Every structure is written in structure tokens, then in C-alpha cells.
Amino acid sequence: MSGLDIDNLKNSFQNAINLSGSPGAVSTSPTQSFMDTLPRRMSTSKHAKVLKPFSTGDMKILLLENVNQTAIAIFKEQGYQVEFYKSSLPEEELIKKIEDVHAVGIRSKTRLTANVLKHAKNLVVIGCFCIGTNQVDLDYATNHGIAVFNSPFSNSRSVAELVIAEIISLARQLGDRSIELHTGTWNKVSHKCWEVRGKTLGIIGYGHIGAQLSVLAEAMGLHVLYYDVVTIMALGTAKQVPTLDELLKKSDFVTCHVPATPETKNMLSAPQFAAMKDGAYVINASRGTVIDIPALVQACKANKIAGAALDVFPHEPGKNGAGAFNDDLNNWTSELVSLPNIILTPHIGGSTEEAQSAIGVEVSTALTKYINEGNSVGSVNFPEVSLRSLDYDQENTVRVLYIHHNVPGVLKTVNNILSNHNIEKQFSDSNGDIAYLMADISNVNQSDIKDIYTELNQTDAKISIRLLY
Ligand SMILES: NC(=O)C1=CN([C@@H]2O[C@H](COP(=O)(O)OP(=O)(O)OC[C@H]3O[C@@H](n4cnc5c(N)ncnc54)[C@H](O)[C@@H]3O)[C@@H](O)[C@H]2O)C=CC1
Ligand SMILES: O=C(O)CCC(=O)C(=O)O
Image (cartoon, rainbow, N blue to C red):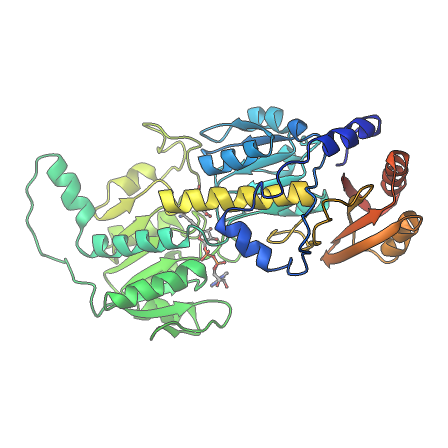
């Protein structure tokens, strides 16, 4: 609650007590019950006290990029104020909107750079309603005590299914036949159209999506090879190969499922296309930085590569609309779209009803648990900390959430500040340069709360503090 006006604490305290809602407010989704089995086995059988950060009506959530309605329902059920936009926002508008919100929910388009985040004075948590978190400056968020959550696998199956469709579509030139017939041309051909049975699929990155795809591909009679920087157990009869080069040389289809990192930038470029089989196909539904598209264009023109399916691009439009995908966005666009057997999709790998509603529930639940309880389990940048609930009938208790620089002596300082009260329980963990302490303390009255906040606020190691009642 950094930036919380101390003078409002008393009111907030009273409001919070008055606002205690149903203990089951966010406990009905499968994700919630799954999460509950992990760190909360110690939960007492008594009613859990519902903690609130402060008056929940003051809690402002900014949701961009058409985040699923399930998320809006969960946030509204908490009494939070929700501002919702279907698209991402231009940077200047985003900076204005983010200034006073406590939580922001985005998908893959919104860039939460240091320049944007430095304006977010009240921001406590960011929800990426997707897998990738490369659009967020995680270092900045971490160093400023902003927790980041994502949905690590709720859309994996959707991506894998899209790639299966693309493998067959490329092998049968379906995109071109369909475009031709849409414009009246009947072109019944079998030249260079293939079955996929018996061909080899090379998967780069054998994580959630790569592994799921491996199982589906084998069911269609493809042989699967994969390359990954870590050794991963093969599913079915798939085989891990030790080098990218070996995968490229042996595969008929090469598909990328790696995160956007400096190491994966232009991972497939001219030398890699040259190493591939003549007439191989390339698929990318990971991130636009992973493939050097001008090099791909050249490889297609030279008939080295027989076709490609691209779902992601170095620059993508911020909103839907005709004419948005053009040479101003990426200067190779018109050359790419003029090539045969190129399937282009607008970053829809994870865009299914199933995936989006599951992500909506999962991420909004994680955000709510972090806002209301301080539970950081599942965060991508914070140490994972959670405490069992306070009992419903426990009065005069406060939960202290103290995010701090990971330096020696902090726990001693903090526990000195808390030592006049009964520390019911506490948990602390670190992750690199930051650490997170949660403590439930009892026998505190309103003026104690003010003192505790003031004293913690003056500690050198503090990054941010929240107090939940
Ligand atoms: N098109 C779309 O709509 C979607 C795209 N994605 C993208 O797909 C990516 C992969 O997703 P998941 O499979 O869930 O991720 P994951 O984290 O489960 O798996 C990624 C795998 O890549 C490997 N890897 C990392 N760097 C590598 C390198 N330099 N060389 C080889 N392997 C490397 C990792 O070891 C890991 O096994 C995400 O990071 C995201 O960017 C995810 C969902 C939807
Ligand atoms: O659905 C989206 O907006 C993004 C999907 C994606 O790329 C991801 O989950 O990383």
C-alpha cells in the first residue's frame, strides 16, 4: 500500500471491517481449489476471516485487450472498480490511465515499460492474461514491489491444436486453395501436396506447448524430434536431439515454441533456413522476434522453404481493423503476403473460448488473492509466499506485507518493530534481490497500526508495505 495516506488509515480500517464479505467469494473456480490444495493444507476448520486491503470500493482495476468477462465478474464480485478496454492503449493514454490504478490486466500487446510503470503510483499487481510476460519490464516491476502474475498453461492446448491444423494446411497448400476459390479460381492440384503421416516434426522448445503438440502430432503418425536448452523427458516416442542443427537437418516441419529472450532472437535466420531440408515448412506461434522474417522471405523465394505459418510478428497492431497489418508496421509485409503457401494469423494461438475463460478465472483469482490476502503463489517475479487464513473471529489482527531489498539484517529490524505485539505466524522468502515477508500480528489497535506502518516505512530496506485487516 505504498503511497497510502496515513490519515486515511483509520477510515480504511473501519471500512475494511464493515466490508468483510462472504468467505467463499473467490473460492468456486477449479483453479482456486487447485491453488488451495498447495500452500494452505494448514487451514483451520474454523471460518476464515476475509481480509481486505482497504475499502474495496477504492480498489481500481484497469483491464485492457478484451480480457475475458469471467475476470470482470470476479473483480466486480469483490466490489472493485473495473475500467475495461477492448484494445491496448497508445502509450500516452496508457500512462494517464495507469496513474492511479492498483492493478492492471493485459494480454500480449500492451508494453508495460519502465517509462509507463514509473507513472503508476498505486500499482500493486500486474496480471498478464496470457503465458508470455516479455511485454512487461519485470526488473522494474520487481524492484518497485509490483507483483506480476500470468497464466502458465491455460491456452497451451489451443496453441498446439492451431499448429496441428497448420501442419496439415501447409502440407496441402490449403490457404492458397481457399483464397483461390474465394476469388472464383478452381485449381485442383496434387503437385507438392503431401500427407503428414511418416514425416518428421521438429519442435524447438519442449515446454507446455511443445510437449502437448508432440502428443497430438504422434497420434497423426508424425515422427517427433525436439530441441530444448534443458533435458526434458520425451513423451511417446519423441526424441530429444542435442543441437538445433540436427533438428533442422532432419525435420520436414520446424515449429518454434520458445519464449522471447535475447537467446531466441532470430533463432531461425538465413544459416538455419539453409541448414533445413529442401522443401521444409516453418511454423512460428511463439513470439515475433524468434524468426528473422526477411530471411524467411528469401528462403521461400529460393524455394528452399515450401511454406510457413506465422501467428506472431515483431510488430503487431494494437487493435483489430482493416489495413492494420501493413508495411508501416513491418517493412516486409507486402513482400511476405505475396508469397505462395504462407498462412498468416493475427496472434490467435491462444484465442479460444475455452482458453480465454479459463485464463480470465485463473489470473483474476490470483490477483484477488494477492490483493486481499498477500498470497504471491504463482507470481512470475516474486518469492512465493502465503499464510493460512486468520480465523473469522480473530479481532484486532493485522496482516503485514513487507516487500524489501534482500539484504542482511532486515528480519531483525522488522521483528523489532513488530515485537510489542503477538506475532501469530510469519513467513518470508527471497528471490534474487527482493524478499517478501508476511506476518499476522494480534493485539493491535488502530493507533498501533499507524505506528507500525510509520516505522516499517522508515526502514532502509523497504520497497513497499501493505497492511491488511
Ligand atoms: N501464439 C500465441 O497466442 C501464444 C504464444 N505463446 C508463446 O509460446 C511460448 C512458449 O510457451 P510454453 O510452451 O507455454 O512455454 P514453456 O516455458 O512451457 O516452454 C518453453 C520451452 O522453451 C525452452 N527454451 C527456452 N529458451 C530456449 C532456447 N534458447 N533454445 C531452446 N529451447 C529453449 C524452455 O527450456 C522450455 O522448455 C511462450 O513463451 C509465448 O511466448 C504462448 C501462448 C499463446
Ligand atoms: O492471447 C493473447 O493475447 C496472447 C497469447 C500469448 O501470446 C501468450 O499467452 O503468451
